[in-house]
Length: 348
Image 1 (tube, rainbow, N blue to C red):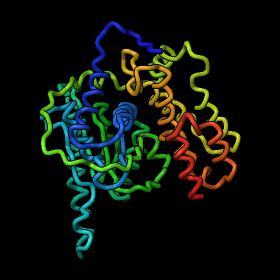
Image 2: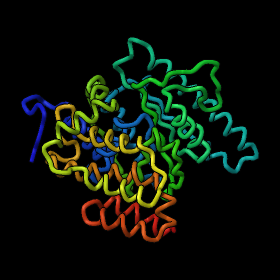
Image 3: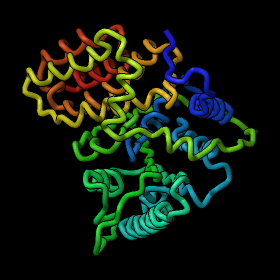
């Protein structure tokens, strides 16, 4: 059943998502549309996003597609920088090169933050992408930043300490890519402000020609980013309020964690709700699927897999009965969440 809040109006956001999916296909990124929409929804939901997966799988290409959709040729609003000097790994001065790269990236990020805060740029999107990061850059540019963003401001970035707090602009989106198929840095500070997306194991197909893209309105994208708690719950109620227990699997998983005394933060449910609310457009149309029930199922699956379950990694690995109980809730309808549990249980 399709349930849109304003069905008569053109929905520019669903059109934007369609264009992003088409651009990714034209760029040779061979994967299902759900993975691309998940990346888009994750950006709307939290200020930091990490794409983790095998090399040459299209992670950086997808970020470039997004910047083309939103910014066109406005290169000054986007910085794509190498996170770690991998080419100097065998050098005797690897520590020096790493320090220089860190300073270089820090300066670029500071410039973006300064530009994003200019009053005339309030309705413009700024994107920073730190590619091929190592655990060191994961800590410096993501975990430490996420910890500080709990208070909405920075006292340190990279190798720079500030004398006064620096507010983090809401129109800046920080993305990282990490070439590993076994991401295992489930730090609570990192997860509080970061969505970690485990990228599908697909290759990047050769694509000698890409169509020129006219950017879709940045203002519309920023208006679509929903993070205010009251507005989030209002949208979910507007769309799902007519259904009977639409979020039951989510609360079943939460109740299971509480029964096993898994350390659990109340804010995690709010984070999950933010992701769910952003999986619909401002006009109430599903971004994953036009059917409300199908869109909810896909979004719930991804939200549980990327937000809820990572908070209980150690418990799932160490408690033999917990994976079985989780699978009883998730198996069948929520394949991504079930697969995440299975992978952790195998490591236990």
